[in-house]
Image 1 (tube, helix red, strand yellow):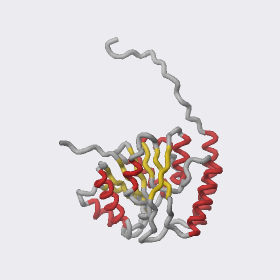
Image 2 (tube, one colour):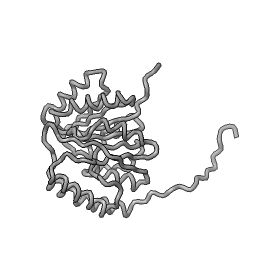
Image 3 (cartoon, one colour):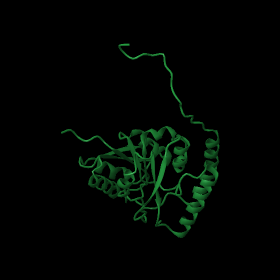
Image 4 (cartoon, rainbow, N blue to C red):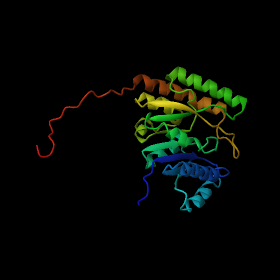
Length: 249
């Protein structure tokens, strides 16, 4: 009997996560293997300067772990890393995880249970394992994004989700756009739902973002997406008429 086709491609963008990436890849593989999902894991290294790539090379030498690694020449940002991984995906469904281990890979099979009825299944962090300051900043950020760009989901900043590969057509190659994927997908007419997921404290390494840094970059992006939302047009086709005839006619 031949191998099962890949059902889910899991994309993990990383930068300087040598202390956590190996455990995350193995945990993701075991969670999906135990659920019966044929899968591949695509880790995109976004210009790490620590031992992240060495960790990934060692993991990739294990034939039991379906791992593919994409290494950038230099840091290009999380949007570029995530998009490169999604474009390399072989499965009809794509899942995304943050590289810090705070997303729980065991939630991916739960998200996939809703795949098909919806084009996008987004996580919502029911119990966030962050500081009070980060929780407050996230609540303000989610509220502001939904106010300016239109409400799509309650937790826009949650990175764990699964979506049809066709959704990539609505993923622009601009820095910062990974933060607006639910909005961009719904703008293009894709259906979306949101289910509670586990959220874990970071066990190793340090966060790459500060609240001020997110705000500084995020505010211009908010107005860019707001402009895109107002100007975008995705007409529904009523029917198509053609003079071409089928073979044998």
